[in-house]
Length: 573
Image (tube, rainbow, N blue to C red):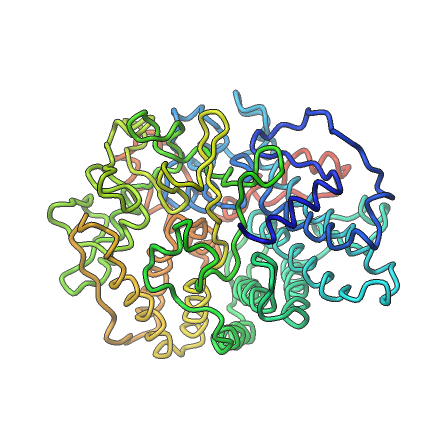
């Protein structure tokens, strides 16, 4: 088992740091209570670092760090699924955009503001980091020989939580270990500008990039290379400068050049490479492999009440007795998404016509990554030729959402990595946050925006070549045809290829909506999606994406109230 998971479990038991676990309940009486003074000591610093790591994996389908609700539902790549609109209505609201309100607790029958819950969990993680950093800062260096390394890891973790808050809400209060309680209570989410917030997040990752070793002994810990990757990602987002209404008004060339330089350093290290088979990124036995730059370390039977398994995906498995899963049919790929994998006679994407008709398995050629990403009727589920998808019988509400299943976050129900809490199946399958292919595509994107699109060509082709060579496990479930690009004749053509490639390569991994906002094309892309999908799925008839509003979620009303009105709401809400 993963060493950092074992350390995490033992450290948390030692400190009696409670977690919500899979049940997501907070009303269980603690077995023991320690005061802050007892826990917050120099002797406990490493345990506190691990406790901060643990909060990355202490997520849940109501507040996931695998961003399928906010990254996939809002992008037109997935339907909510489940038993209809009222089944977690807040996620139905994400799919329709306009019902989103600052007080999502008002959604019957949810009674839980999931937007506020994720905000709160992120700041709880940040609080863990800041408490540990404060101890390090107040302890003589001689007593903490590894204090600089521990501090760098903590700042990496803090950067992780702040990045998540930033892409969801844009304007957030910055709280760090130097602030007093009075400072925190008077902090506003508008104290720093949009760019200044990005600078703060980047600085946390810079410390890790400059301080940590390239490779850690404990799998799952942050390294200099994973910090460089997060720094490159932060700078890429920051490069697309937005005005107060979220319009992209400039693309910062200096930031893009730094992205290219950072990825060059990651490549030169030789630590990471593309997995030979695309499938290996999503199979339990290959986790923490050569393509994993940073992943949430999932675990079962680790000493915590319900384990830190894949609770964000606990609702997402097929639902039927014959499927081998118990529940619940969420996260259903859209026809638009499936159609995007169709290829033309040259093996290239059908950029302009892919969505004119729905994919037909008998006649349409596709990119092989379709069958690594989506399970559908008559095809093997997760590469098992004896385990065939049953179509509507495997779906909870096929008349509303269809019967596809997203499978990157799933495993075979017979996997030793499977656990359950009642009907909810979970796995100790890691959640990839940054894969090496993602890193390479950042470089390609930056090169294209720097007018160096010829240099981006071999990067994109390298990823497509890997896809073409990833059919061995697919049991000839489809007609496969994929090829590389011969040349990019213009920046616009290269940009189109890059953006399409990100959708195919990283499909249903939670990135798509945030890509669209970064590029400034969310409105036009989602309008195009809805113009067709509303006729296919009538539940979307009232969906409407409002530009200059729905690029970001509202600041939770509860947080504005708790701030005494200091926090300022995002435009349009």
